[in-house]
Each structure stands twice: as C-alpha cells, then as structure tokens.
Image 1: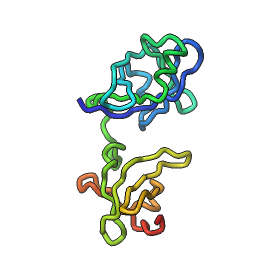
Image 2: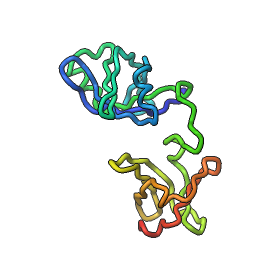
Image 3: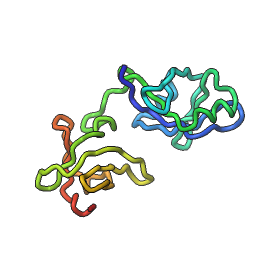
Length: 167
C-alpha cells in the first residue's frame, strides 16, 4: 500500500481531543468528507484512525478521531502525519506535480549539468522552498517561476538556470 502525505497534526485544541492539522494538499476541502486516515510519525509506523468530525477554519483542518477523547490523547498525536492511500487521491491537475514526485528529482543548472538533488519541499509563508543537496552542502531555492525554468516529471529533473546565485 502506497501512502501519500495529506497533513501534519500540529497540536490539540481544548479538552475533548480536537486536533489542529496543517493540510499538505491543494484540496483541503476533502478533509470534510474523508472518514479515515493513517496516522504516524513515519509511513512505516502508521495506524488507521477514523474521523468523528471535521471542520476547516483559517487554513487549518480541525479533526476529532474515534478513541481520542481527551487533551492527553490528542497531545500524543501532535507531530504525527496523516496519510491516505494513493487510490483516494484526487486526479492530478494538468501542469502540476505531487510533492512526492518532486522529491528525489535531479536539479540541473543553466548548462544542463546536474548540480544536486531535491531532498525536501519546505512550506514558507510566501511560497514553498526547494531544499537541494549538492556535493558541498544544502541550498534553498524559492519554488517560483522566476528561478525554475523547467520541471520534467518524465525525465526526473528540474532546471534552475540561476543556481549559481544560491551558492
């Protein structure tokens, strides 16, 4: 079973087990209709959890899970990730990529020479940032059109023509 990251549990709210979740999706409204997730700190350690109720507010999902009925039980889940099975994902919109499709992608400079590997996508207030591992360390590149010339899912690479500016 292949699991896809859909959100991160941030913290409990109140005394009855409600959880604040940071969505990691272009479709946060689907939190309102899903009844089951897989929760864990790593995909290999997940356990199924059933949703009692869900709401969306201020960019966050607020969830109650069956069996999580106190602040203490909710606190134990803080920091866990929520996953869904691949078959439950919405179809990928045209000219878009899923985050897991980008991670591990080769990064090429202006001349087409490989300069590193994309190791993580970091959420930031203004936009996401690509973390690229090079032979000399790690470089952070804003995930905006100004810096990214091309992304080829089929070829497994992206072109960052101004890569030298980040060294």
